[in-house]
Picture 1 (spheres, rainbow, N blue to C red):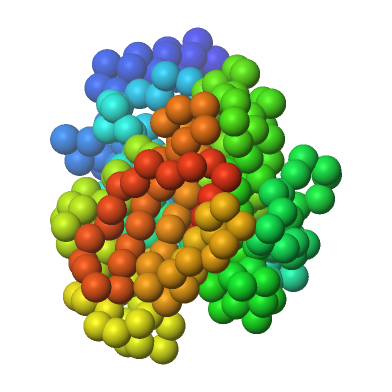
Picture 2: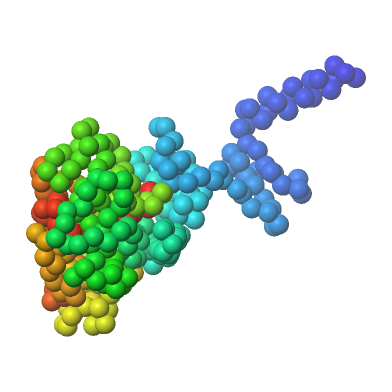
Length: 300
């Protein structure tokens, strides 16, 4: 009897290997001929591995078709052989909020990116006549040295302060070594300063530089000076015109927003993006590192 049972078990094992099909259910339902794994239930679901974006992006040599639940985006993601996909348009949805130095920041998914919907505002306000320094304290400029402007438009930051002097970077020198991944800088944990390439991805997704700015601007003239051309904010980015600081002077509040990036163009210059009140463009500009920029963060 024991030998007979052994043969039956062996037959079942060999059969399962030959057919390579498995059914998981409670009613004895046989797997569909087209499926290697056929799961059937009316009371439970299939739970894939759950992990953050950082953990997902840390998977070594993911196979095409690999699937996970991304807890950062709150979305199912799969690898298409080149990059991670979400498979649906989730524009306008939040990918989470964060409270940072006592201030809440919301977010919006635009394409496959997640952006903060507010300009960063953290640090100790210093006079516009002074340069921000590597003194262990995050420093900011408030337009016209008025902290009420920081409350509305966020702080303005020189590039070195923005990247927090990472790898020895200053407003007149380059990194050493050049970072190979995201630069957190003054962004909260799990977020990073956008690169020039990430700004370009955003611009391209929104239809290109000539129209992207209008799709990013807050509508109306509460904060933007008239005419606030083509402002629809259909992306949910809610860009504000915080102006900028240059050589100790503050310029262009309500007229345009100047947003910094983590990408250098030279020892003393950096790529940035500019949105104006009288145009629909998202301009790619080459700014001086010692200007004061508005800062938006991207989620890792």
